[in-house]
Image (cartoon, rainbow, N blue to C red; front, side, top):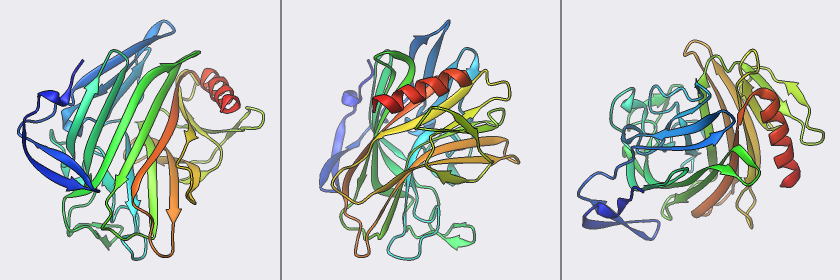
Length: 309
């Protein structure tokens, strides 16, 4: 088991009312976890390059994640309006790092904790903003004034749940700082950037378990999304099973995207909180189940999970 307990504390910083360690040595976010499924194994790899975010997920010889820059991972992010008109990416804490990190070997995000075992891992990171101050997205200037945010992202990932060896339980907690005022909080609870061969998009009917072909989008809809290869021999789908209670929250929205010029596709699970005065700060916890296999197995597994939840 790896642990962040070896790090030496040299100071303290307070974020969201919580005292966090400043570490004199880098937390080790390099890990490989695995668990058998079928005639193969599901193998998940995290790296220091991505501040402990998931760089690779393989099964039966197929890579499911297209990890090129610091945005194309199996990871989490959030977007906020910063009290003004909302524009995507202009106030966008991102687990794996910033746009400027590119294909480089380091991340602007800061890994605070990391532990792993045979088939599980957990981490906490202080997320970098996707845009650096002065950069633009869609012609709109970044609203953040620092490279790294005060937003924390914690995750607990486990391969396999009772009855399903091909399901990955993914628990995510976003911690937002008290001093910021936002009227819209958009949580990309989980997104998976996939190789372009995963070009067939399907929506799963939660009523009868049938699949419907989806357009390239981009966009969100209420049906859980599955991305599959042309032959259907490999597929990945996701189902949200838990979200914060006691607040007005919209979702889940299941998105799908095709970026042909970049040779990558994407799915995501999104929730939003709107408040005309201010979105409350605090900890926002979610749980998503990610399903791996061939298309028919992913379909049937997702539908059984829908019925159980």
